[in-house]
Amino acid sequence: MTKVILPSLTNEQVEYLIEQADNIRNKCIISLFADSGIRLNELLNIKESHIDWETNTVIIWGQGGKQRKAPFTKRTVELLHQILKVKRVSQVSVDRK
Image 1: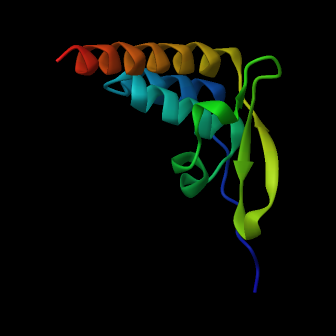
Image 2: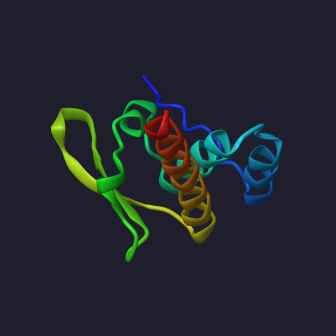
């Protein structure tokens, strides 16, 4: 059985997808997928403590419980900072109620 390799997206295609996303969360997801090649299940398990801001990597636990570091770009750093800022603001407003 021959394994089919799907074509990669160009930088322009990734930028277009990010621009078309309707919120910061979705922009961040698209950017992280494009940069790191992580799987959906791996994305769902990322915690803020898994992010290494100095090396622009995120610790991922993949199939079979194997751990690896997945890199991401400055674009994703900016989006992650934005989404974490929104998350913190919403937590503060919930705490005040």
